[in-house]
Image (tube, rainbow, N blue to C red; front, top):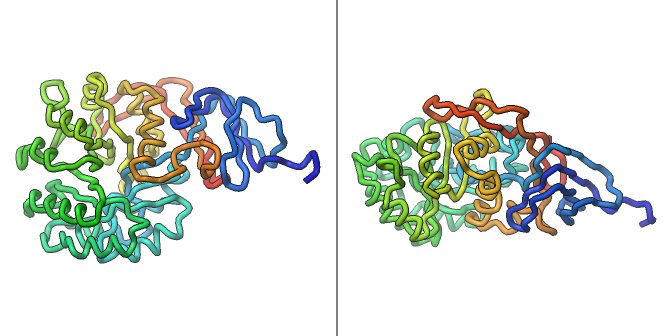
Length: 377
């Protein structure tokens, strides 16, 4: 190597770089070589084959979406992760139950292995996953513990946990208590956590549902207004606080119907922040405007009162830690060079929750996406 040879493949320069793990929160240059982060520095003095400069941009680790529906096939909710998630800043995504024991082999072969996006699975307790429009637990026989555990053993390196949705849509006339009980049986046998969707309280008190969950289990749709809500009389329910103190985790899961500004504002004002921010992205979002994205959901949380630093943590290192993914959600030296650069809107913009309620706030939009050191956007 001569003295004037490049010492980096890529340098991303931004007016603000945030890495919650290192922690770095300042202007800086992220230096990349051989698909890995070399360092974050105030100013890189060496030579680079390529330099991208965003003086007004916010550079972050590639985002981690803890609840979405990445699936190239066999899921009625599925979207292509490389087409709909990665260009919107998501480098790593957890599939919420798209595949079950009967179709997990195909899911691994058709979605997980070929995708540039890092896809992890919360396998559905239902053997057929989300492969039909009918509720996945409409037939209780589909909640097959033995088949679920056997499928996990076949694909353990791709599977983080077990998805159990006790909602009326998922269960129809099936008893949600039995569904959760079977999910817990499978989780105990496999040594894995649950990703849990709650049942409406008039069918089953939320306190009883939460009391059955364990440390490391994740409750999604936590800022939903209806048919279930964790706020009563303007305060976070005692059962929810107790569950968090026991180690149960809480995820946003925005989706088409599962985010309320009023609920989020009440929770945040009382000091109850979500552990993770996620989109529940699915095929119904494919043509929505503005684009449904993790940066947009983060912007909504900030508009509701969540500090931007906390929102970044909840969409990067915290979900990566929950998923057990070493080197993901961070820009520390040696980690895969997955980054997103966001640009803040010049003025406040209208943002809407799932009920059409509006808040004004600054929104963040994707300017660049880097995956394993390669420029995607």
